[in-house]
Image (tube, rainbow, N blue to C red; front, side, top):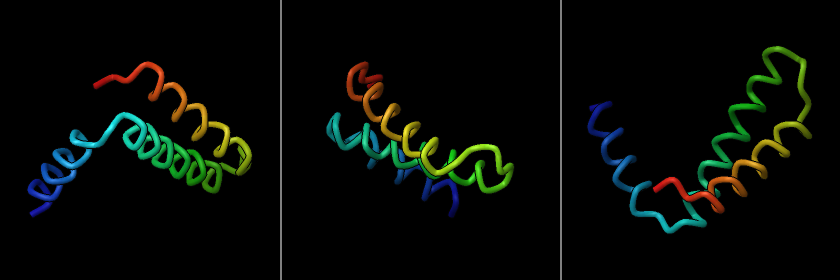
Length: 65
């Protein structure tokens, strides 16, 4: 069940256009950094937003797929 969901998500992500893929990765990056900042209280929401935006730009420009 979990593996099937993973493969379905992977197939969906691989079919995304370049900009939507970059935005999806940026959103995931934002939530990861934001969750880490809540756990460790070292970073702020501004850092999470900057990381998300930077990730979107890098993934859009250097398109790894």
